[in-house]
Image (cartoon, rainbow, N blue to C red):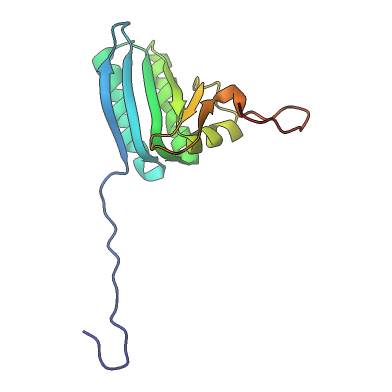
Length: 151
């Protein structure tokens, strides 16, 4: 209720819906398991990632896990830590984890932190149309400081 001369108050409600989804879990003919990470991986979503990867490790034993992260649009330091923990847990269980394809935003974070090779990233590809795509080696700056063009 507002009175004359006063603006009505506005309340913002924040959704408690998850921002990270693990989707498309598919066992492949070669014995590996493929899945997609969709959304954002930050501090609030790390438990969801841990639970999902732990469940996969139990269901598929030592099957290699290949993650398509082309629709993972945000990754912060807590998300990086969560991915590293999941990778370590899978290795301890006799499996391995890779993310060969990632969204350009995630690619940039992993490139800056020096983790492209750790996660086996070979390509950046945006989920939505119109965003840049390319292979990892095309976007790493030359050691001499010269800028290389992607291509």
